[in-house]
Length: 297
Image (cartoon, rainbow, N blue to C red; front, side, top):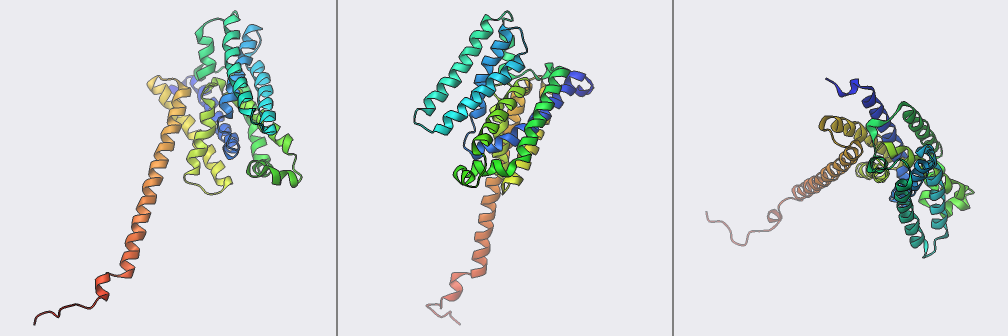
């Protein structure tokens, strides 16, 4: 009996595939800027939005989008100033976000660890039809922005000063990246959870970098690997009865290790082959040395 004959499993698979496609499309820019953990920080801030939604009996997704967007913009403004106190400000924002979220969830009428756990680590199989619509719409917006503005976004990630001299709206593009990060983190709450979304943004990109050359090919490979990890993770989670979000991340890490080890083995094999070929082409060194004693007849 197939697991995907049930509607909730089909919705879980569709949601995971959409996130697996859109998260690496955004994550490649974050990796390029050496901001791989920004999704983790925004996830901490989004937890406060979840707590506000539960406390006010409104949609936690909506309040999480608003709060995480504000937090992401604040993070970007702190990064832009570049002062030595920036790390401290970010730490206060991150830890304050998760502490505020836990406190507000405790104060809400919807008490219990189940509510908090479902947002921290995902609850993919409980994705409702309206949740799937929100995920698809927001993911489509993220994909259109990341693919349509790829040259400009690549420019600010590669050399921000050169992009500014070239006339690009650097601050607006930076704020766009911050806002789309917040949106991606929020829709991934139901898929892999706030504490694991950063992995789905970064690991497929890191895996693709092992085997590709060039930004465009790396982006395409990362998106394909994200979709593959999502599909395999959902299938394994349904088969082994494990947490879907954690399973997707474990599959992504396993893929990275497999590609990294395979690449290292292939490079070692090529080096040995090149050394052997060079030795054969030069010939044995004894062939070019005259014998010291003539052989007996």
